[in-house]
Each structure stands twice: as structure tokens, then as C-alpha cells.
Length: 159
Length: 102
Image (tube, rainbow over all chains, first blue to last red; front, side, top):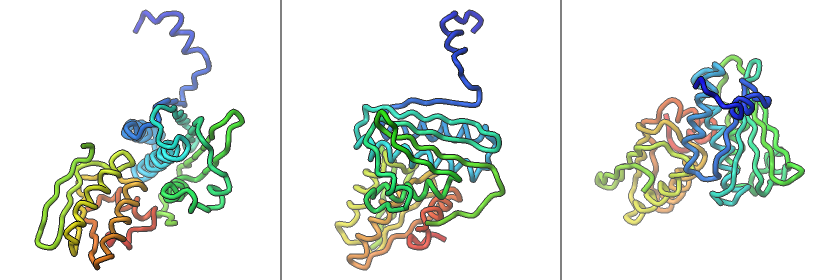
């Protein structure tokens, strides 16, 4: 490790935030196991309780599944970016895709009928996390931001 | 074959022991396995989740679909041996009672 090339050292100096992990992976359900492991590890590093870690992992899988199914229509050759950031008192997850975006009204107003079978997933994400923000990106695709804050363990918030 | 499971016929009941976590990647195969048991119109299908550490909405939707199918001939679906994490997921989905999970 001592002979780091200048190129590698340079790459390390381009604003990499030590509290952030970025994963870019194919839009294939095969990668859900990888995403689960990564999210579980990150949530644990952020010192969430075991129960909250499980819920964060569930939200990450639901978000990824919705991108695979709805944004990319099951095409496994597209890219999904997941950025996980350790916040003061919590964590933030940002999902970026270049697929077909969903009408925001259907997500924000809880009108999930049109999104079935993904509708249940959206409700579960909202129950697991403290903040849910979905927006279309100017260049195409969508951005989903989920945040979870540390706090006293709460009971499940059923739909 | 992605989903690991065991199938056992017990009189008029069928027991499916899932040996894998359940997400979108295997939910389609779980649906096929469940549908395969419907040919004999069993009165009870037991889904044993003792070895399942994770289930997502795809898996839950598959179980609900199976329950709806079984009801066509008054059959029932019973989910057994769920871990605390899996039970929490059913709670979050608001579907624990309908699946008869204690």
C-alpha cells in the first residue's frame, strides 16, 4: 500500500468525504444481496440499533427494487447509484437513476395504486425512514433521498 | 434455480420450508413453487420461515397472492417460525394479522 501512485493519490484528493460511501451497481435483482450487506454495514457503522439497521436495509432494498422494476422496467444493464452519508445523528441515502421517473403525486400523496406491485414498497420505505423525498432530475431519471435519525426505538408504523 | 426450499406433503397440507432470504430476485420462483402446490387444492399451505433472515414487499406480496388463491377452495395459508426481524417487516407492511403470524 506504500507505493500509491500519484494518480491514485490524486483520486483520493478530489473531495472524497470520509463519511460518505458511493456504490454504483447494475439494475439487476442479483445485486440486492450486495446492497443489503453494504447498507447493513453502513447503518451499523452509524451506530443504529439492530432493529433500525434492519429497517434501513429494508428501505434500501425497497428503493432499489422500485428502480429496477419501475424506472428501468426490469432492464438489468442500467446503472443505479446509491450514496450513503453519515449525518450528525443519523444517515442519508441518495438513490440516482436515469430511468423513467414516476409521477411525484403518486408517491407523495400515497396514491400508490398505479404503482402496484411497488406501492407496498413505497409505503414500507416511508414507514422505515424519517424522511422521504422523490424528485425528477433535469437531465432525466430521478433522485430519491431517504433519511433516518437516531432516536428512541419506535413501534412499527403500519400502513 | 435460485430459491432454496424444501417441499413436504403432509396429508392435505403442504409444508414449504424456505432456506433463503426472500427479495425480488427469488420472489418469482417462490410464486411458482406456491402455485405448483395449488394443483391438488390443499386445505393448508404452511410456509416455514425459520431460516429466512429477510423478506421484502415482493415476498410479502407473493404470500398474499397465494392466500387469495387458496381461499378460492377455502384453503388457508399459515406462516410459521418467523424471526423477530421478519415479523417486524410484516408489521411495517400492516399484514401480520392477515397472514396469521403470532
